Image: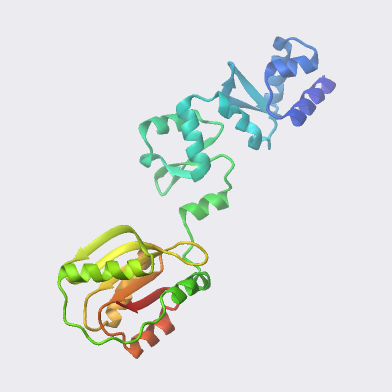
Length: 276
């Protein structure tokens, strides 16, 4: 019996997840006898069995061969294939955010979808994702300031500090919006999401800024006022941080030397301020 067990385990080790009929053939026994051997190995936890089936039969595999279960994909129903692809890409998803059909499909994907609770929220994780990988997705680290500073260097070159301009008269809502759009167009800055707009006062959005290392996403705050206060800068920075993005602050008003020094000292790499 030991030699038969060894032959079965050796076959699965070499060939990966296998059908009972394949194992019976290598044993030179019928499927009933092979099934008895496989049941015994399962009881000893020497092998594992899939929930998904190929032609009505499950696959048997060794612990540690979970990465070889992808051969089951072609035999999954269409909805389970969709759920499989989604979870493989995202690594972790919230049950409450899923379409009902995908939620049901994940419940059927016992070989690939692992349910767990996080802060009383039901979630699903990809079976090959490590605990550290899942933790990083669920609880992302705060942006690394030196890294953000490095990313902002191309933007600082793209948006050079402009010469002081003469104070202009207060502009209408349309003129203010046009000024912002002209500025964005001048530097090929694309609006990703419009968040809020106050008449003749402020515009808030998320934008993509081109650079030598590709498009960089930033939180944009545009203010129509004669002079920026430190409170304006702090509030803009806080809003950007809530989105986990560096902030680009545009203003029609004066940018004092003291303001620039405050930014350099406290918010370098996290906030840029430019006059439009």
